[in-house]
Image 1 (tube, one colour):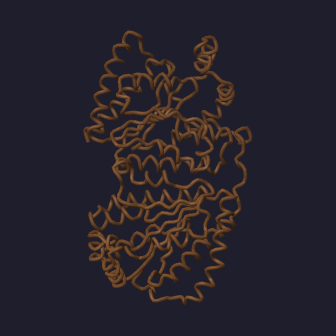
Image 2 (cartoon, rainbow, N blue to C red; image 1 turned 60 degrees about the horizontal axis):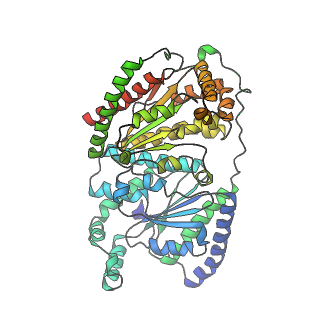
Length: 496
């Protein structure tokens, strides 16, 4: 495909100058409109070494307000980045609403080099491409504009540019051994590039190949491509306020057709205090030893706690972490998103907390808020929380593909036990702060939350990231079960 592209296309200087004046004005106006409407933009520059990416990025951003964009240069991952999943470093650099992120090379570059230089296995290549497609679709679904540009030059043109750079003492540093090595393997890279472009070209994140032999022609094409993408987005109607019917307005399904994983949970399970104290100490010691093992083996552990209000998440987490080295774990409490977090994709704040390899992250509530509280309280549109099941499964697949251990708990109690705990908290001065008006309000929506929980468990419990329902009417039983589950998951992973 790329070999058939006409790379001889040129633009006269006078025509270029005349055209650019209007394009630059339009570009600046579109940036202001995107900022006003809260539309985030990601522009990806990929292409051959010496194809002129730096020059073209500079030309593109000159008409823009520098307060509204950021350029990210992608090099080999740092030590910090290498200790996290492939897409982590790009997730945390995605732009807030109304801002533009320009990537000088991106998630594609490392994949391309690995494919050619390291003979990447087909199954791993397929998985990484699947992760990339999911990554881009999630942002497109969230209203992002994604523009992907590939700057194309021939092998002969690349050789000529390398020679010119090497002859000049001021620019010779820009051509290193790796550049020359890739040039010698131009044919292999060409095959790999064509395959990756075809497999990641989509209606929501299409590729534009830019003929880059003539700098002026390339600049005009890039401006036209970016402007056209932004204008198309401006023509898209803004999402309406929540269009989902309230739970009261939805027709009730017959009881016999509903599927419930909570229905069969035995909440009578208990553990006597004497036995609990003996078991607890042994389990905590065992987990401390395993923490050292995962650190030495560089294995990430992500533990998610969800459950009913007053189900005992805080106490469970305290028993889980009591003997752990505090330098090796972090408890991340999740509440309502702040203004910065609201300006990003809803998964952005959770990716920021992902632990580096060898460490443990414990989420006290998590990304499942999208399909629980946000669903029930109408804080997002129905299409958003329904889409979230797929997005969450994709995120968790990316985590486990990296080698992370993912453990998900739903702490389950019945309504009567919750009421007893609420009343008890009201009577104990040092626990009164734990009960709020919101807790009572949520309790009145017990049936709606129960429906949401059941659907969440069914749609997001997968072989790689299953849910563990913890019978929590008895806190002692729940604490030991959580410890046993974490220990078993780590031991199973270490055996592999």
